[in-house]
Image (cartoon, rainbow, N blue to C red; front, side, top):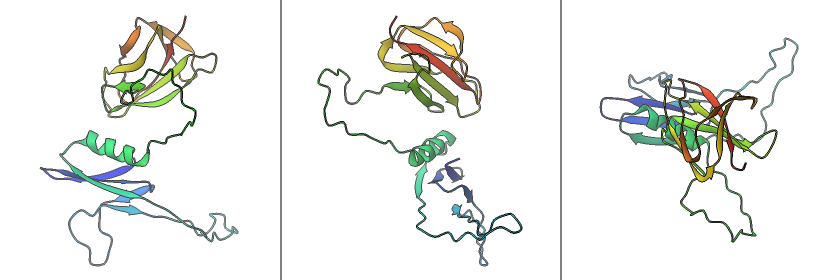
Length: 193
């Protein structure tokens, strides 16, 4: 899940981590009775095959942890945990395009609900249309608005392998969709006719 959190009536402490497991119970001999957020580091030292070899685990191993405190709110823990584990990666393009007209503070896409995530933005497999995949993360039916930086001409709902299911009556720089709880929905944005 990218994070573990502990909360009381007033606030939450969230620990974001890139390790696979986390726990909140103190396992030490002098264990305390309050919550202890901790990452669990596990290593296999021998093959599961009865005659298998030993793993030496040589080299450097790196893990990261980030802590935040905030008001009691599950979506804030989720946002912090995933943001800490998925940093924005940038690419420097030395030759700049002087014809661009996007403002520096503008997003290519914006979703009105923080618990509906864009998991994929890619070129269509068949042509130059744009594929947008949304994932509902909270387990609730939602109706988010998606805003774009540039207007599109047509919106098509597709399945996961980009086969068209239905054309939606939307054009312009924003559209609203219905996404079911825990759903993964895919849309094709057509920018030229």
